[in-house]
Image (cartoon, rainbow, N blue to C red):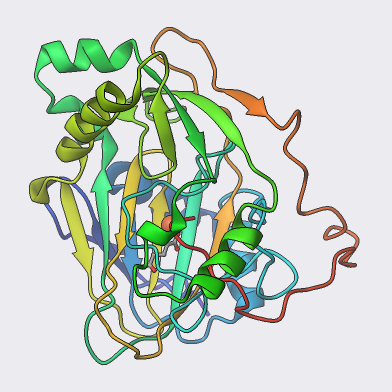
Length: 322
Ligand SMILES: O=C(O)CCC(=O)C(=O)O
Ligand SMILES: [Fe+2]
């Protein structure tokens, strides 16, 4: 139990991103003051890490998430527990080894993601995060001005074969079928004004299909240009997981990448995301859903405690870069 005598510590890890928080036992019963400290550290450092949270199960994980906002299920991938938790399982589905921000193919994508390590491999399987606010701030002025005026189309339909070249075609096809059971197209500003900090952030990542108004090669060149500033090593932090670790990131100010270098070793994590709002660009124009007409609510039925869809067999489709 968290007690009044516990002191919360925040220790920076990287120069531009990342801090480890100590003295906190995560759960649904955390005092409001501790939640406020975590939230402040999260907004300042973009990703925060906690060791030794082995006591957390799916319910505790979700109860803690509720202290940061409303948990939200993945729009297409069935939850591992029939509620909100998404399985990231090395033995199922593809890997998240592309730089991305979670679920940017819908307008109001998650504000926070909370990832908990259940089983970690003996080596490898680290995750990297990049700070998209410092990436913007460090751009030369002419590139900031260019980015300010751009918008980009994000989609969950892309070339899955490129992600895991050695995966069996049937496995990829099955994975793609689940992940893209509804195909979303959303146009976002390339520069998002952060709703809580007011910082400008670069909103790109692997769900980007093209920069609006540009043709293939121009679009790719510009995307690569901005992406190279996001993923430059100075702008990132790398976390070596132990089981019981929890990472929370501000999904509005980061991208991340799960390194696929632990061969066939088991690696299992659980992710709960917290609902976000619709981005706006520096011109005040919000993101817009191009298709379908609305984002179906996958949480339908959860509030009543009854799932209206067949709960997935745990881990049948872990997300890739979701
Ligand atoms: O597997 C990882 O390290 C990252 C997974 C991921 O992209 C996520 O949890 O959103
Ligand atoms: Fe992700």
